[in-house]
Length: 171
Image (tube, rainbow, N blue to C red; front, side):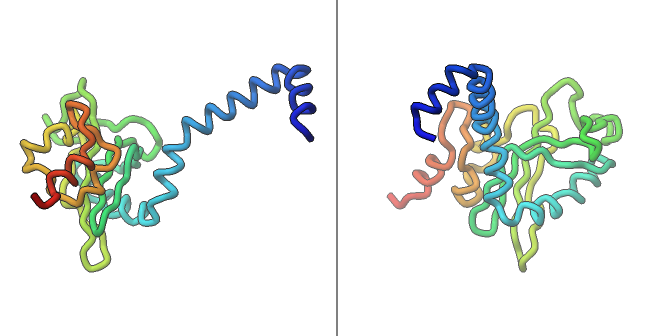
């Protein structure tokens, strides 16, 4: 079908045009989620390695909602949130008393290291009220490979991966 034929269909069927446009918008919005899952071949191993430590602390089974998963060398950084395996929000009453402030955001922050072919949790926070990467200076600076910070912005909007590379560059 040529472009003239497509234009006639669009003029005759404006509803079809709106549906097609809606589909394009939905695919555009889902692209980052699809991208994160499909570009990290070790995603399942990383999540399976993190799960026991988190479940032990929260005293309940969890599933991950991954916002970002970056891998560089033998390191992985994951940000997101946690859910019950049913998809419902975590029951924070099961966690140790005073573990999380009930009314604040609960961001997930995980850093894992791969040693002897297995992923192991190096650092995690399960109920960060603010992104931990906003306060890297207070945490010792850039402790891991710069690729882990890809797509993250500091509190002042700084591109953390670029800043990490800049600081790591020989002077």
